[in-house]
Length: 256
Image (cartoon, rainbow, N blue to C red):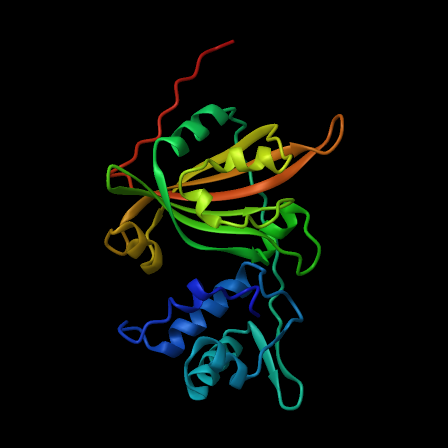
């Protein structure tokens, strides 16, 4: 479970929160079952191990697992443990093709990033499928907050296949990831992205310094590389949540 639950994620459980610890743990486990990170048939750790991992009591861990069972996400059997019974089903995604690598790199060079979490980790099932990773195969995971002139304007979550963990993750504070990709021999051939809007959850709200539930601009970006003369695949999956008070997204399009 160490490659699924990072120290940053575990640290999100807070005794100071008005939400009971068992429900916080339940929500974390539920989210990773629904997105396919904890896949169908996977045996979850026993209550003792889960309690030790998240630094909570066994009673707290048991109640979280019982609630997962009540929602039909896991099955608990004496002597066999707890297994995921939810079947993840991928949903179709449609994204416009946009060539804007220079703009992406320029933004990175003209701002700085605080790295909140990093490591070679197992992505959610949907992202693993897009990156064409084998079962339980890891990818480079980065969680960052980007700021300019002291204003935190974006919360960045990325998963990258085909690269190794840099010796100093601090390079991502000021070096564009595209530059790092090139150094690793990966060239982006095109970018596909979607724009939407979401409400800030507690974790993102805390990172950006906004009120929980605040509206954020959501951008999902898939970067592709060539795998053949006429074939390509997703090599990088990035989700950015922008604070609209400090960030505007504009496009100037012309007919060719």
